[in-house]
Picture 1: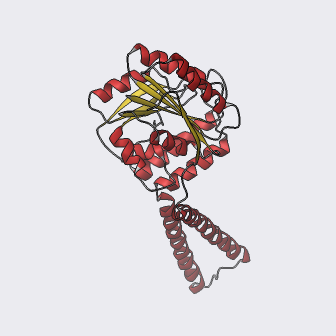
Picture 2 (picture 1 turned 90 degrees about the vertical axis):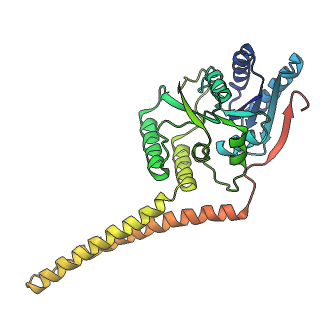
Picture 3 (picture 1 turned 30 degrees about the vertical axis):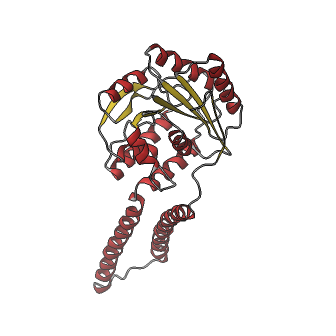
Length: 314
């Protein structure tokens, strides 16, 4: 059986569409599947729509289709929703895809066939990103460029749209860390892997829930969760400042011995400002990592589930 994990945050207009679109395609191909909708603390009627889908599946009395709804106590973020969906998936393989259908359901058939041919991780990579704000597109390029250099894993066209064999799912769920970067971890776990290209589809209804600020926070969080590169930047900044200080010190001594002592209160102030800025930025980066360590050692759950519903008993 193939499990489809669908994280949903304020997607009340897309839940029913996703259900019918995926059902039509997979039923036609006679692929047994289950849908796992995860309501990530939505503020609209997303959970009510998920309930309607589960009730619809009950009335249809189709034994081959399992529809499950998982409801969070509040918004825990997309990574938590993905993990909860995978934890509640019962299939031999699981696909993570967006509930807004920007990940085309038609690609599921090709992913399934590749899995049947022995591949344990099928990565969906973006052939094109569709219509996006130029600022957002540039920011995404910078973020994935940084992640690629920091992790040595190519993430230039990475997405959450991917199929994972049950072995890969178990490997991810066994990890004790709380701050997870799903796109990075699915590449890090290894296994027999292949890629499949897809074009990001336009949203038919609704708007993206990602604001510019939330994307910046998402980028910072995941870079810290999956890479120590910012910590290395502190060392580099300290090294560059030290080299600059040595050069300036030599210049000052040379001018002093030839009778042209360096004058200027401004120079001293500028040096203090530069060094102080480097120190403060370094402390900020170190402090952020300490905060993440603090979150990890508290061992709080990644998410809290208030209710799980499904159309049939397993």
